[in-house]
Image 1: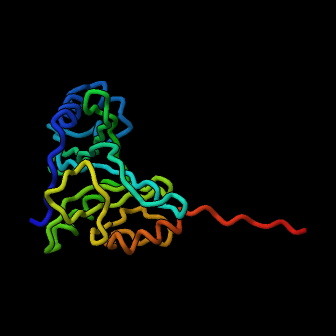
Image 2 (image 1 turned 90 degrees about the vertical axis):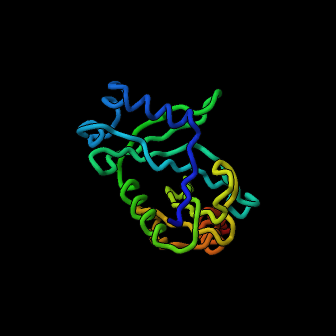
Amino acid sequence: MPLHVPPAPAPALRSVVTALGSPTAVREARTPSLKSAQGPLSPELPLPVHVLEQATHRGGTPRTRLTGWRFQIRGAGRTVAAAETAPTADGWGFSHFFEGPYLGSTERALRQAEALTTPYQPRLLSVPELYMLTLWLHGDIAADAGSGLPAPGDLLVPLAPAPPGIAAHRPHRFAELLPVLTLRLAPPPLLKTPA
C-alpha cells in the first residue's frame, strides 16, 4: 500500500466521535445523507487540510498552514459525509459535517494514488482564492503531517470541480503546477486610461 495515512491528533478524532454521537450535531448538519444513514457511523481516513498561502508574484515564497483535519464518515460500507475539525486554544475541536462533490472526488483521487508504486503521505491542499482543493501526495512519508510545503516532486491531484483550465484528477508535480497557480493568483494588470 503506497499511501501512509498519518494519524490524526487524538483530540480531533474524539471531537468527531462525540459529534457523531450527538443527535443535535447530526440533526442540524446540512447533510441529508448523514441524517438518513442507517447503522453505526465511523470516522475514517483522517487527512490534514493545509491552505496554500503567498503563491502570487508579490507574495514571495509560497507556504502552507494547517487549518484542520478532515475525516470520511462511513456507514453501511460507503462514505456518507465528511467531518472537519479546526484548531482550538486547547487542541482540536469539531467544526462541521458536510457532503458534496469533493467527497467522491477525494475517494477517486485516493484510489488513483493507491495504484501508484511510489509511497506517499496523503494530505489535502486548499487554494481558497481559486476555489480549488487538491489531494497532496507528499513524498516524505515520515514527515510531520501538520507542517511543510509541497516539495517540487510532490504530486497534487486537483479534485473535481477544478478551476477552468486545470484538469481534475490529473496528477501534477508541484513544481509544474505552482507557476500555473501563481499566474492565476496574480492581480490583473492596471489598465491605462486614455489621455
